Length: 314
Image 1 (cartoon, rainbow, N blue to C red):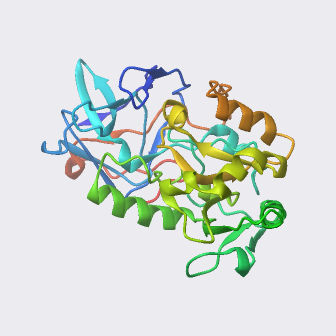
Image 2: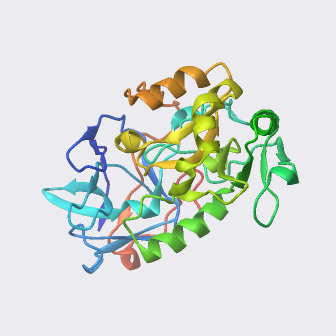
């Protein structure tokens, strides 16, 4: 039996009682090899079918109040089906508008809008070793890296010492991290779904103090307080505060900072720190983007072998 899914109107925020009015003519895409579909939003139920990598579906994202797991719900002839949000990604049309590197500060990345999994900036450069923490090389886009070095040196002039513990992260690497984390806790909100991590932009870092202050404890360090006062003049803004959870979908992370450029950063930082609601950016849907999702086969063994849509993979 073939089921064609139709776009819905609302996306629920993490509270379960707030809605995000987004343009859901843009479908979600299955990034996992396979995504189960259920009659009810419960991972303990038996799947009634499966989506495969590259399938597109649309509908409201809801949150199970008992488990805090996110689901994409859709209806047909009065029957509601559910796909776990954890297997889906949705690039924002603005992030698809032109080839090449995304304009710094204009990228739209949160829990509901993302970038293609294969996006990788062309101008990544290594963060100087003296500002790096942990094993392995840290990289950022060139402009962001130069601004980071200037910011760290300014902090050092005041006796403070910042270090980078994480920086650019590829789409496939985010798949690995997210898959591992949701296996432990399907409802977790600290690890971003693939395509929805600011780290993939190449303009985002996780920070700690040289003397070991990291994680939530970073907020209690002099380095964190210095960043809150001075980061924006170097183009850097903290992404996630306790009061921004409904807008971003992510928990408070005092260590997570993104480069927006010195022109945009001061106003954005003031807005974030004050808890003002973000400016809503409605997507402009490119004409070549399919507005209707592809069919879902509830019984794939009996589905006809037919060509798959553009950009789809078996």
